[in-house]
Image 1 (cartoon, rainbow, N blue to C red):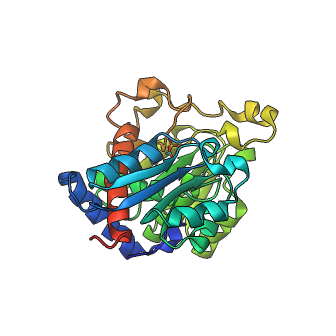
Image 2: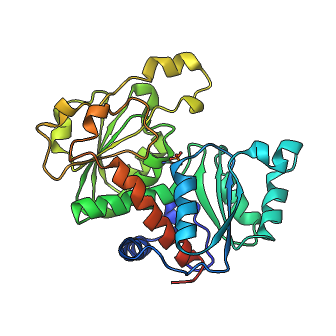
Length: 302
Ligand code: CP
């Protein structure tokens, strides 16, 4: 994995997922290590973020590295008309590794093609969010003790949700059954369903969030993302499509855990937060260990 960019979850193999997960578990046991001493990581966020940016920056600091960057394009020379290519070529002169979030699908792949250092995709539009996916795999493995043969419910915005796109592709390596729950206008795009058909992986589509979740091992809830809609009327029609409430969990399996990449708006009622099946804040914490592992491996320090 040394010197390789991470743009899509498909860039890494199943064996490499486990290498990352095993190293993340080591970092969870012993998070303060000086592996990144003398290294500089650039954190370029052209879109808002709390968890991805701050967990990467926490991971860098826990590993003894330094971070430079910006948290919005308005604070960079992009605001003066500089191209993404020139920005990436310039930052490549300063940093050992670039982490980039950008609203345009394909921008991360493009950045990795022009950069002279590895690039980690921290989310490119509705396309991919591979480091979120790896922390999701870590969270699923930690709570289920396996990634194999699980029944996964993916709920909410499956059309624009980059986290569910990455997770579906990664979990497809582990013989899952998928249940997709979304309004008709936000269904899983056909190219992803074709991918599942070709791999002969079972999936079911639902428009209602009902007792079906009683069979779930993982319920992965996502936000309907206002920022992805060009027509606000269409957003208003679906924004409250699903609200998971505590009372809906009473017949669910003991091992079932609720994940959410966050941020949440109102798709999980706050009365769920104290239920032992709610795992989303621990999931966010797992992001630090997983991102420590990803950076250490890409920089060839482990
Ligand atoms: N999960 C996630 O990507 O959250 P942020 O947008 O806060 O980084």
